[in-house]
Amino acid sequence: MNREILDFIKQQRVGVLAVEMMDGSPHAATVHIANSETPLMFFFETNRDYRKCEPLFGRQLTRASLVIGFDESSARTLQLDGQVRLLKGEEEQKSFREIYLEKYPNKKAKFADPKFVPFVFVPAWWRWTDWTKPAGKIILTSVDAN
Image 1 (cartoon, rainbow, N blue to C red):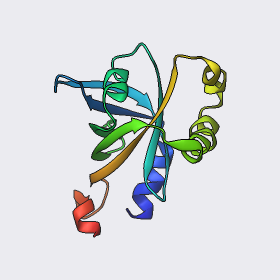
Image 2: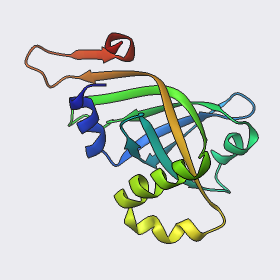
Image 3: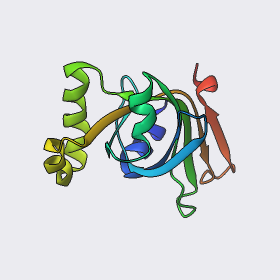
């Protein structure tokens, strides 16, 4: 993923995450986003009582899609498909604290709540659309980048 797209992601605070529920139906919600670049991973938190927790605790990996940049005034958007899962091991817990909680320090108090659930989205495919270029609409995908 090129630097322009990574910089765009860093500027964003909110995305829409859709997860596949246990019955195969989709569930979408707005979420605060924070990410690592290498490897590209997106960190989130939720409450154990919220619907998106059902597949997180119901299976090891859950198919998901994430959309970042849905404000038409910016004229840029990033769509990603991949999988969500609970964090694995101390290294991912540390990354979550360093990346997500640093971006959203007001959420640090929630970390001690037993219903607090940190999780990660690992993209397998992405598409970047940018209408701001003088040449017109630009579309890049993860396939183009490889």
